[in-house]
Length: 353
View 1 (cartoon, rainbow, N blue to C red):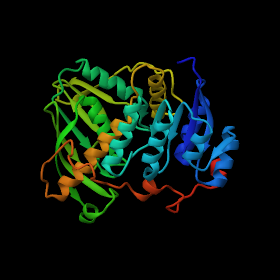
View 2: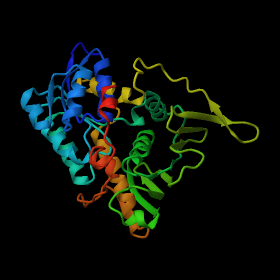
View 3: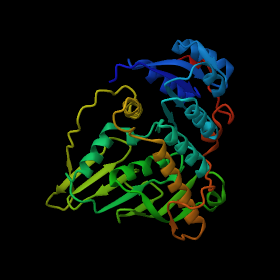
View 4: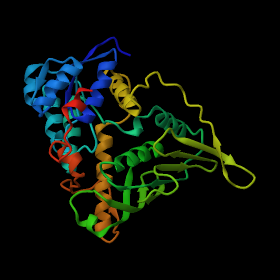
């Protein structure tokens, strides 16, 4: 942990933003100096709750006040591009954002490029890829402890392939240390295929990865709901918990569960958000990279867009990276517009606690 005490701004302080605020008020090397939220009454309540006096209605006013070291962007998706770029241009050292990063691929590109050009650390958010056990399982896969990877599969790639499916794609890319380079997919129900959003869309298909692996994709959960990667002797299974490891076979040919004996992690207060934040702060301090980055979220969005595109083209193969960066896939309205705009506002009583 750095001796530096980073000055943090929370931009978008709804339910998830408050979860971040709780974390950043807990850690000894961070201090929330400002909050931006469009809801006036909630803004005042949260200022009192987190002990913050600098309260703003929007990012422009916040940056005009004091530029923070860290900007935590937890707005609805439709606002993320403008907020991230404004923070990068203002000289913020590190920016994190939530999922999905955008609806339009070129908007995600613009955020990644704005941060890269200015040397800003650009982190992703509350994804299980940032769980320390997921990171350790991936490291052990990469160093050959379990042998050469022979195959992979994704389970439960449906419902929200951008807003929720980014979890699967991010873990798949991490475990295999590869990118998706071609997709053949089909989807149901028919009405979801013609909709602008990914709500209710179930995708089945095949991903071809840059390292030559073929990955089967199942839209509905099978006996698991996450990502499997296997070698000749081992199966590594992420199923929304610390990965299970199966090594070897019993006399009946069944896989034997192996105790991975994961290393202890010094931070644990906020589940996998902890790994996201602590690796982000370490990267800002010059030590390594965030365990989930803005670029990771961009890649997950691109895979989701390509999967739907293939499904709408009668399972025609779609190669990545996509040439048409204007392609768009909107998340469900709650993610895109936020709870205040979609009939799920947070009560002031809830915001106080």
